[in-house]
Amino acid sequence: MRYSDFKMVEAADPDANDPRGRDQRDDPNAPVDAGLKAGPPYPQDQVVAVKALQTRLEKLGYSVGSTGIDGKYGPRTARAVAAFKKDNNITATAGSTVTPQELTVLKTAKSVKSPTPTGNEGAGGGSSSYDLPPLSDRDDIQGAVNAVLELIRRVEARGHYDIRNGSSRNPAILSMTVAEVQQHQRTWRSWPGSASAAIGAYQYTQDTLTSYIKKMGVNANTQKFDPAFQDRLAIFDMRDRSKLDSWLNGSISDEKFVNELSQVWAAIPNDTNQSAYRGVANNRKGINYTAAVNIVRTIRTGIA
Image (cartoon, rainbow, N blue to C red):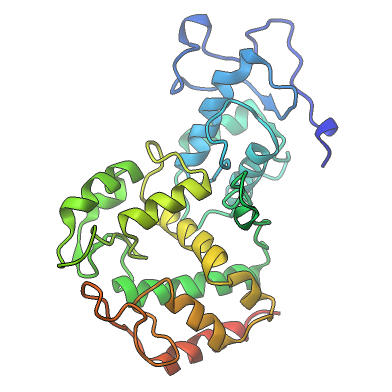
């Protein structure tokens, strides 16, 4: 869609599209009740309303891109809106429009297990390696991605999202923001030689987590470290470091893909049937290489 196709809602009252009134317009958490449409242009009198929209989308797991909560309802925010609408069966309008009724749904919506990728997860705005195109929403592709995520979760964290250092569970992690998790990671480390605790279903250390939230354009102070975000993080990581897209389209073999995964996740062995991180902290393989390849191959057969 061309930028020229986006139009702002016309309003006789300059505050008509900011439902909070002049005394609330500096509060980014104030509710948004007026309909919005994507720009450019990006009128100053709608900045706070759009920031509230973007903040809510991020909290629900829909990335608005590396520009973050900037108050501009542009193409990236439109993609996040479209992903939210898809997951909530809102079909009447596109991502370039949010009606008052849809804003009401947005304010009360619950996070879904696997939010539809917005295509902004890789919109790094700098290095082209982070400017990833939207992942296909085909059922077979989404099913394959979710199955690979399940494999990684099982060998890294016994299938749980609240795992700390590969063993102990801490449900409080899931209600923390990413920033709060990062603050705890240094003190939670439990193995000699480890710089920080490995956290969550995909066992991210502090440095890696910090790097990837920056690449993804995530606001660590508002984004919860919940299952939906953890899945989104791992999908981005697989696309960035493990050649997920190449495996999905058949450009690399199942064996190659498992080897690529092994360079990121220590519990998945490489073709020597050993963890690539063996001897570092307490890292060890959680599955045999042949078994991992067979699982990936079975998943691959489900892709049309």
